[in-house]
Image 1 (cartoon, rainbow, N blue to C red):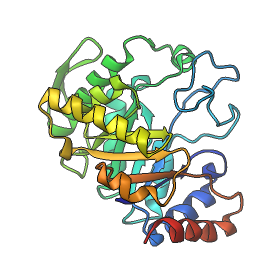
Image 2 (image 1 turned 180 degrees about the vertical axis):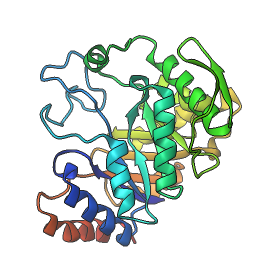
Image 3 (image 1 turned 45 degrees about the horizontal axis):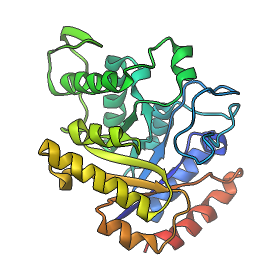
Length: 286
C-alpha cells in the first residue's frame, strides 16, 4: 500500500513556494500522490451539512485561500517528474464537461501521464445556487459528464447525447497521455459506492473514522460490484482517515486499500517544508 499526501491548495498550501517545495520533497521522500481538492465558492453560514465531520461543519475557514486544483497541480507537475497528481476532488457537476475534459487532458499531457481525475458530486447547495447549477440530480449529471468526457478522450470525432449534455462531431484535443485516464469518485455514502461500482475506476474515501469504518464501506462497495458484475479487484482504493495510525497500514492493505492519503497542512515557512516532509516520511514510508 502506498502513501499519498493531501496538502496542496489551501491556506499555506496555496503559496507557490510552499507548493513547489512540498512537491519536490514529497517526490524525493517516496510519496505516491499529491492530492488537491476544490470548492469554487465558500459561504460564511452554510445551509448544507458537511458530510465528513461529526459536527457537520467543514474545517476550512470560508475566507481561506483555496486554489483551483487543476492550476495547483499543473504548477506542482512543473516541479516534479515521477510523483502522481490527483484531484481530491473536483466537483464535476459544477463544470462544463467539455472544458473539464480539455483541462484534464492538458494536465495529463503536461505531467507526462501522471494525473488521476478525482471527482465528486458535491454536498453544498449554497455553492450550486451561487453558480446557477441545479443541486438536484447532480449524481445523474456527474455520470453523464464522465461519459461525455470519456467519449472525447477516446474518439477523434466525438458525438454524445444525454439529458444533461449533447454535442455532435466535435474535436477536443489534446488527448490524455494515458490511454485510460483513471477517474476516481469521492464520497462515503452507499449511493456514492454504487456509482463507483457502476462507472468509476476507483474510490477516494475521505475522513473516515477508522479501519472499521473503511471495512464497512469496502464491504458495501464489494456488494455493489457483485450486483453489477464488476470486478472489485480492478478498482483503486484511496482512503484518508481522521486520525491515522501506522498500525493501520497492514489492516488497510488487507482490505484492498491501495493508497492511504495523509491529510496535512504544510508549515507556513518554506524553510520548514523539508523537515516536515522528512518527519512524515520517516513515520509512514518504510
